[in-house]
Length: 314
Ligand code: NAD
Ligand code: UDP
Image 1 (tube, rainbow, N blue to C red):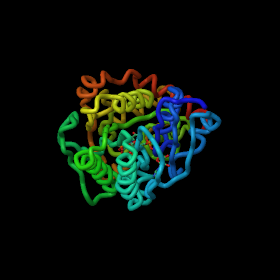
Image 2: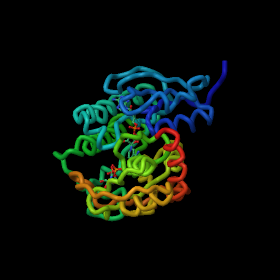
Image 3: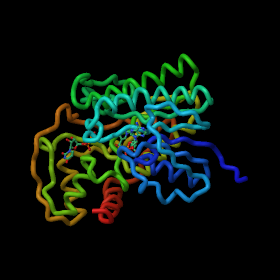
Image 4: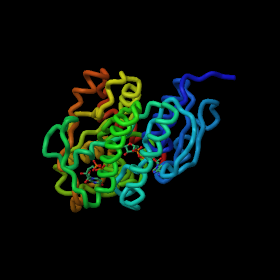
């Protein structure tokens, strides 16, 4: 029988980030179990892994408990784009809260290490800039984004309570906007929207006046950061910010994408969605110091790779 390194469970493994994580961990010879309900993920994202002896795919909804063996769990299951997480907001909360309880219970039972894919949305519309891990955030509890933001905040609470109460070996990373190939073309996120619109020579939809800022991290850098966090010291449980500190306005992003695609698209301004954060930029000094991690791929290079991917599917 073949022997693999570790048994690793990835929830949400058929999604954008999860599928890249599957690629890396399969490549590193781990025994990878990808669990997904295919709400926003797709078999297409992991179909190239299906024949491999160290890859397994299971359709399962994380809101239901599951009993399996694992050494490590990466908990990524949760729709991440506003269009998708607002489609069934109650389900979004259930996935974050009940899904975390189910995975933490599993980690406790089989003594697995477990990493939570938390988010910069923990900081809400931040009053502190750039955002450091000790900032508690400015989040609306009753708005349209709350199902995602508060679900993720409660998940962090659960992770820390299972750690204090049951000594579960946890890791929490707060992921800032990440982009790359296999983003869902209709998920309404800014990078995928702008690229698809540019390639189709449609008008680029900038919400508000486009002065709001974001910091974009290429997916390979993010996967590297997550793996380093999982393999980091047991006393570094987080939360740790992972993201690219280079900050761009949304208007700048639109102009870059138009330039890189050579598109004839113009820009059309639309209303800013409710509770849309005006600025966002991670302070990654903790990740730099403790994980020796920082993004290496420049926005322009990452965008070129992402544009190539979308050319193949648009
Ligand atoms: P995604 O939507 O592509 O992936 C989420 C995956 O979870 C999908 O495959 C989906 O089918 C699956 N899923 C959703 N609900 C489920 C359930 N109840 N049971 C089982 N599977 C379920 O999104 P992504 O961008 O890959 O995000 C992955 C994780 O990273 C999410 O938890 C998200 O909150 C977090 N994150 C992502 C970003 C980003 O910029 N991409 C930023 C911050 C945090
Ligand atoms: N945005 C935009 N046009 C679009 C999609 C998004 O101007 O077609 C803006 C959106 O209002 C936000 C930013 O781009 O200010 C990032 O949006 P996204 O949904 O990608 O991520 P998040 O708001 O979760 O950071």
